[in-house]
Image (cartoon, rainbow, N blue to C red; front, side, top):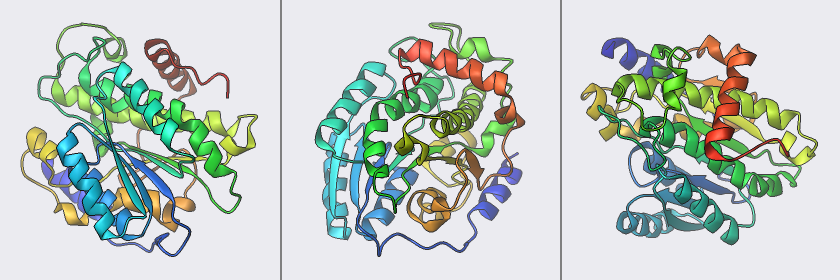
Length: 307
C-alpha cells in the first residue's frame, strides 16, 4: 500500500506546464490549515507571486509569525484568523470575521485536514475526521460564497473553490459506513477508515457543489469553479502519523498551488478531480451525492437551496 501510494503521489507531482498568476492583478486567497505542511508551503508560493493572503490555523503565535514572514516574501498583504474547525460554532465565527473584513475572495482553498489513529468526537459529537475534513468546508464554503460571487463580477477572472481530497478515497467503504459518519457520539471508528471516508466525502462535495453552482440563477455563482485533488504523497507530520515516513519532500508539494494559482486550475473543468487517478465512481452516482448533501445540510444547519 505504501509503495503504491508513494509511486502515485510522486508521479502526480512531476513537473507539468502551468503558468502562475504572478504577473496579473493581485488576487485574494484564503487557505485553511495554513500554518503547517502543504498549507504553509502553498501560502509561501502564493505570497511570492504577490497576492493577498487570508490565513487560517489553530496556533495564534505561529499564525502571526507566518503572516509577517509572508509579507517579507512579497505578499500584497497577509492576515491570520484562528479557529477550531472541529466546532461548527467556530466555523461560523471564522466565516463572519473573514466576511466582515474582506471585500472579495478570489480563491478559497479548503486545505485543513486531520488524521487521528483513534478519532475523537467533535464538539457537536461527530467523528472528528469527518467533521473537520468535510462538514467544516461545507459550512465555510456556503458562508463565503458571497465573497466569491463578488470576485466573479470581474469578467476576466474565474474564482475557484479548491477542496483537498486524497488518493485514500479509493479505500473508503462509503456508503456502507454512511450512517456512522453522522452518528453523534457513536462508537469509535478506525482512524484510516474515517480518513478515507472523509476524503471521498471531499470529492463528492466538490462534484455536487459544482452541479449546484452551475444551475444557480445567479450568473456570478455559475462562473465559480469547484476543483479537488490528491495533494500527493508528501512527507508531512500527518502522513507520518498515519503511514510512517514516506513520500516526497514538502518543497515539491505543488499540486494545491497548481490548481489554485496557475492557469492549470483556470482551465480545469468544474467538479473535476486531479493528480490522483480518476477518482471514485461514487462521484457519478446522483443518489449518493444527494444523500450526502441532505445529511450535510441537516447536520450543519446550513442550506444551499437559496442560491
